Length: 127
Image (tube, rainbow, N blue to C red; front, side):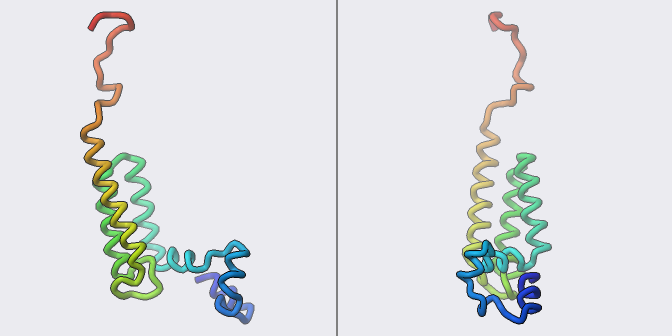
């Protein structure tokens, strides 16, 4: 992680500086470590989620969230080392996101047709 390298170059560590001092300076060190673990895979998962949600492809987005939950559960992303249940709260968050996205997908199927598909009638005309 770059902050570790910077602190190491300064001859100190995050523990020596103190997490409270880092937080007061605007550095959320634990959060950086969580997001930084497996950053390439995490970026692919989160970027895909964002793009699919924007495109209203909720089922596909739910699949990506499910994959994110599995990868997080086994420590491939959002963890400092590979292992089982290294960051269970983050894995549960991905799983909850998948459940919500599946609910959105179901709701999107029940929603009325967009205005472009509704037959046009003139204003004031009888249907």
